[in-house]
Length: 241
Image (cartoon, rainbow, N blue to C red; front, top):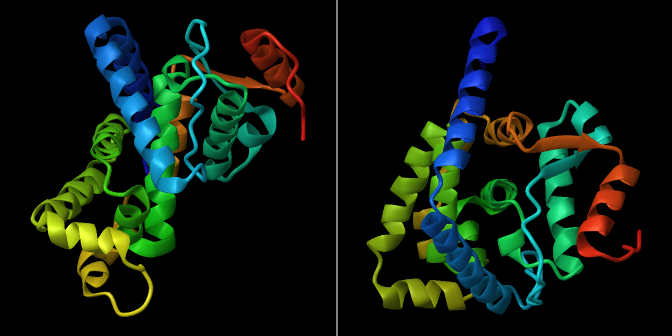
């Protein structure tokens, strides 16, 4: 992991890259991203029956929430997952309040889906990611783009190699794998698994968290401030758990 001046240089480079990316992004690209997220919304809702990756289906007329916000507590934590999970909590809350994904910051969503990939792989290897995601084209494209964006070169190389394995499968074989049980005797599952993920000298959680922390739209707020900003955005009071 980079330290001292080298780390600062990398952070500045990432910050500059994100600023240029944001300014140079064409309207057509944004619309394409929105369509892809909508397609992902419908497909993942159907796959998961409203669990885990549930996305709001309510269309809300509003402008994009152009910020990535996390809590002060998460920011002070030494665990990079806390920053990632704080961002995820905000996204989930916005969805619960009827905010469509096209109005949520696209890089906040990028971090969200990268964490989904990370958690699926760490819990059950690559086969679990394929199985639980339904091998979704839009999701795969977002993960591929996200890994490249956060600088996870080794993880991107592995993801592309693993993706090639699936593409080489026949549609019938893949379909049977997705419909069958993941547990028990499962040769396809075993052929998809690759423990190289756990040996890579790249901490995907740290890269994801640093991507958020160094983003030009990143803000750290108290929990009360977070709720106040979100309530102002959605136009009504949000119940707290």
